[in-house]
Length: 296
Image 1 (cartoon, rainbow, N blue to C red):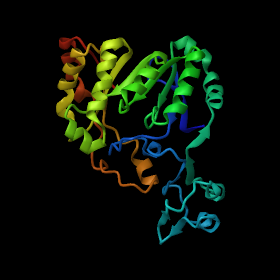
Image 2: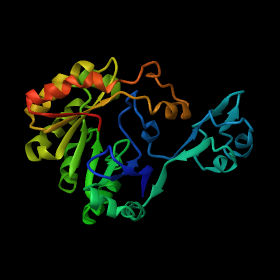
Image 3: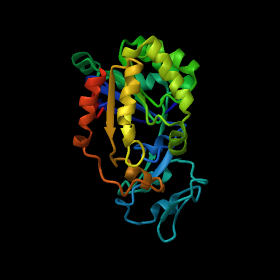
Image 4: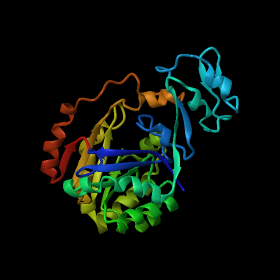
């Protein structure tokens, strides 16, 4: 069984063509700008949308674990909540939902096969994302093998924060690595995200040596964190012979999810980043022999 957060059909930003993106739960990082914080843990989790809530108190009344209270504001005690879903069944305005579902590989394959025709006509395929899609390694590796057996183009949207042994095991089955490079300073990277810089760089080095054409370097460009790293990362990608760097300008699409999980979103005060401000990097990439795209 593998814990799945969401399966998004007709995705067009997670690799070439029309794709189905499978978001797997579990991640070893804690990026404060993360758009999918509900994927950090493997277990299903209850989320509450205050914008929809009418404060009818039915969820509090029916919660078998007594995890929901109004004091006077809505509150979930996650130490008690078992994500059983009882409260969601009583919530008339659908302010409550469970994020996460345990599925077997066959169920996932049945879902993604529905759009096989679209993949074939658009040169698309399947993207595994997260969280970190290799966090549930044994389960995700089985899924990767099954997708490969079906002949689908497979992209892995990944942090690279895992052992080289795991990368070597999955590499023959993956057609495209959409791999993050968030910062080239190990201390700043660790303090912001918890990532292991040396481990990530070891994996990038392996891919550079064995299959650089299968790699697109992805850089989320974040206010007050790594704007000064853009040219450095382009230069670094050029030395490793990676053909493309995608710059992903900061957005706040995950803000509501943080709030729905009763978590503080520390980037709430930052504006959206204008793609036009990143356009000089495209020309810089040409000078270095690297294709630079704004957005995924």
